[in-house]
Structures are given as structure tokens and as C-alpha cells.
Length: 421
Image (cartoon, rainbow, N blue to C red):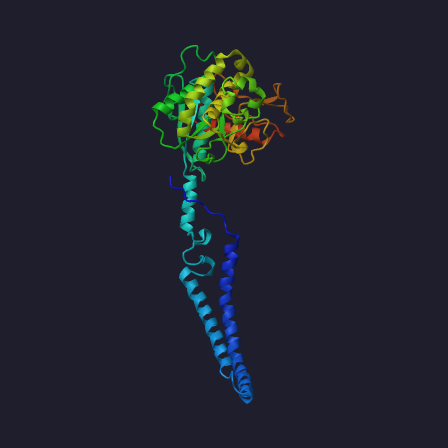
């Protein structure tokens, strides 16, 4: 990919060229003043010449010659500046001296626009791992609906292809609605009832078998809703990831050292992340995914690790696997928000609705207790939520209100919603 850098403004270039453009009329006016003063100067020079002649006349011709030389030099400078500006396209766009190039002034508008397009054109492919359960299907439908909506908006240039990586081993009813690649689940009993353990194995298979045009991949989950177009947040070999407050490798060094020995480096090399959301170069993920799969299985089969990490075990495994390959991530808190704890949308791109949202009718959060108003994805294990969910009561934060509105809009526009296909 040929990337044309967008240079930062040079604070001195405009001021410098402004002085050049103003010097021409100023010098011309001064030249006209000189023309008016020349008769008087000539009289004074003649008087000086006569006085010099009376004194012996040794320097009689020097004063007129000096004046002519100064006039000639001034005329040369005026002409040079004038023609130089014409050749360079005017004072405001003038570049540096011949042989040098001012990147701010000399870069034409079309080139700057091309640089911006090139930066936006680093597309990523969305990989959404899922099962064929009804609980997973309705979330995938909402997620894909909003992905297409944001992809079509200005700023969605980086949002490329989309694949639901279905790790149930067989097609389901969404094959015609969402681009889907079917992979095998782990062998029976290997996931120990922890279905998320199939995720790294699904990525290994998909990366080996599928044709993926994009250079980057966004690893996503069904309970992600896009709220604005997502740019490519990665920087070449530095993936972008969301930092989770509950992923704390340094607090579990004893356990982490079972999989990341001391000779590999400090525990702080392990990022406080999971595999999703992450935007990463495909070549890096191809290296990390097999390690991620093996570390996940090892962690699950180690009683102490399984008990300590619980439902976030596979997230720790991805963080450790990345560190084992020397990959560290750019941590982007603006990647997503998680209601009800994050109350404002701000400049974030994704709503992650993993937590239940419970409120009193006064708009007070009753987390840990079922509220008089609630939205919790786990309430809809066997089928999709009804269309036109009741909006939260007054006082409930923007993030929760937006989440419910997004689900309502998707359900209103998706066919056969109530059938739970």
C-alpha cells in the first residue's frame, strides 16, 4: 500500500510568503518616491560636485555612480521577486528556493485529498464468531444491521467485508441474510461446557480456509452495536484493542507465569485486553491464533487458572498469546462503551451490551437487583426480544436509551423478526 503522508502545517510558511507578496507594492511605491526626489537629489549632487571641484575635484564622479548602482540593484530585486512569484503561482503558494521543497505549500490539493483517501482506505474485514443458538442469532442480526448502516455512511470507508464465523459445524437459517463461513466446533467435551473456548479454534480454521481480501481484521462479537462509522484504529503492526478494567495480568502473576515464563519478559508486557474488539493485521492474527487456541485449552484444563479467570479465561489467553509473539496493542478506550456503567456515548464507536441494565421508574440504577424497567440480553435466551421495546424511564443515561432505540430500529426493519430465524 502506497501511503502518502499528510504533513502538518508549517507555521512559518504562510507568514514568510505574506511578506513576499506585500514587498512588491511597497517597493514600487518607494521607487516612485525616489523618482519624485531625484531632481532635488540631482541639485544637491551638483552642488556637492561643484564644491568638490573647488576643493580639487578628486571624487567628482563617485556620488552619481553610487546612486545608479543602488537604483539598478533595487530594480533587479523587484523584477526577481515579481517573476519568481509568477513562476511559482503567486505569493501565497510560493515554495522554497530552487532545489528545495516545502511540503505544505508545494503539495497540491489533489495530492492532499489522495493522502486522506489512502488513510481511510485501509479496510478491515469483520469476523463475528457465533453459534446457531436463538440467543446468538438475534444478536448477530442486530449487529450486522448496524454494521451495514454505518458502513454506508461517510467515514465508513474502512469498514470492509463481513463474515459470521459459525462454529456450530452446520448451516443455519441466517446463511442468506449474513455472509457466513461454517467451521467445526471443538471435539465433544473439549470445551468443558465453556462455549467461548470454540472462538480461537474457529479463527484458526477460518484463517486457514477462507479467502480474505482485506489486510486487517476486526474481531467482533454478537452483542456489539455500531453507533458511528469505525475507522481502522490499528497502526501497521500495532493492533488496536479495548482495555478492560477486569483484565489485570499483574494481579495474577503467579498464574500468568505458567504460560508466560519470566525469561519472556515482565508481566506488564501482557495487555489488559481480550480478543474483541481488536483490529489487527491478518498476518499477525495468523501467527497468534494457534497459540491463543492452545493457551486457552491449557488454561481451561488447569484447575487453578480456570477457577481464577472464570468466564474471562479466553480473554486472558488471547492477551498472553499476543505477548508470546511480541505483539502489543494500542489501547483505545474510545473503541466502545459498556452500559450501564458507561453512561455517555461520547466519541465511541460501539455499544457492548454485555451487562444487564436495571432501573427504577425514577431512573435510578438498581444493578444486582431486577429493576422496574430492565433490558438484559439474557432475558431472551430462547428467541429475540419483542419489537418496540419500552424505552427507559426519564433519568436513565444516554447510553442505555440509545441501546434500546438501536435494538428497536433493527427489529422494526429486519424481516421475520418474530420468527427468530
